[in-house]
Image (cartoon, rainbow, N blue to C red; front, top):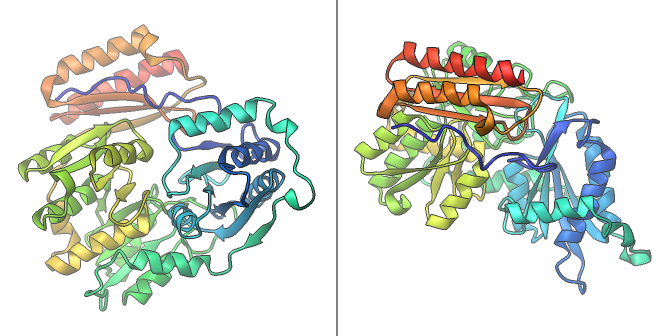
Length: 461
């Protein structure tokens, strides 16, 4: 079935994109001056009552610039009279969890996820552990741009204080393990894990070992500059090789902030988010645990996932790209499973946001319960030929107003008919245009993806 050719929900705003604020460290908007002001604006936004102390949790990944932004953000919050709980290097889903359990007013993850170390970003969570809705981000953005916070300067005991939470890793460890069936262990299972030199470099191997697995870990030596560098969920070559060398039954690749995972089966093949959604949805549906017999995916989810789910009596609902939109639709519809092809899987039975470790443990649980290898489980879905291209752009003009791009998209949709899809969109976090074309014929898909990409390059490259 043909897809809507232009995605509009994630057109970026001036400060917040589809996943918080992100950019090159020390270049606007990711400068310590702007982040300090962002902290002041967030402090003001989350001060819902004047008769109590407010508290915000701050965690980060392992980037060199994390120290700078942690200090700037904490200073901005404290200057508004907000207390700060510093949890240090912590997976983004761990920040969401700790925000809830520490009963904080909000949480902040300082991370640029899968981006290279030169980048960094700021993600906010509400007191319920969910990412902020657009309206809340718009209000914080307005406070940054306006002059209201310039008039607010608490003094004396009204100034906030910052302190370290020493047992943050242990709290998150216990939380993650609760997602694995209590009646099972990983005894005798050999698992290779790639932590991307990122936020999960300590907790991921520890969790797997405590559940009984024989762990072979790579990407566990962060130095501030090597996060995601040839390792992790977007660079699985090293993990695929390690799975073969270690004769592992499964490999787990996390990204820099560990909110997503890509798995590798025992033959060395990738198991992406679509495959994991199919595996988990099928199992949950058979057990009567899949709410509404529905999975929430995105416009980028492979058509093969839709077919595989439909054959099993399961509906796939699609949203714009971005796990926040997936979660919004899940909450609106009362659904409990959703995610993205990139490995952001959200199980609302266990967490409020994507969690790569929990995702991996849920799939390992299916492997243990069924006694089937991951290569067999991934065969539930037959991928349709799909081409994904990322193109650097100098500006993000409205794609709907560029005649040559629209002409190329229309030609592709005409050639594919009802047996293919075209999605063209901007990245919400980088200066990139994304082109996705899928259909039944590899040659046709490749040709039209190339033509669309060339049209974009000519106008915006």
